[in-house]
Length: 69
Image (cartoon, rainbow, N blue to C red; front, side, top):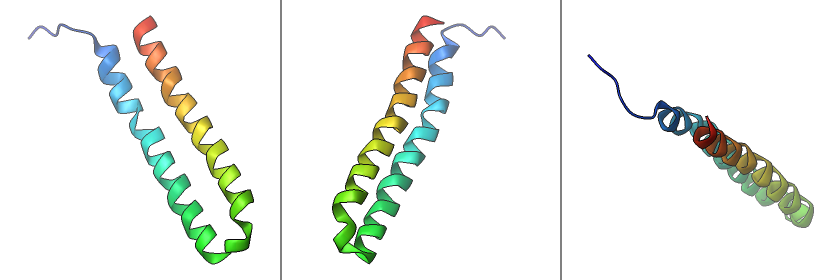
């Protein structure tokens, strides 16, 4: 059996599962927190967006490394 192709892309596909789950948790728990305390919406939305950005940066770094290696 001969395996050909670029296995980096398969590795990135598997690594993208983590940020996908992370984004779901960030927004799911953020919406739940806003529902519990609507007066803290501004603070919670800012923290949700920062968490989303940091999580997506990890996915983008993985994508870049998949093409570099």
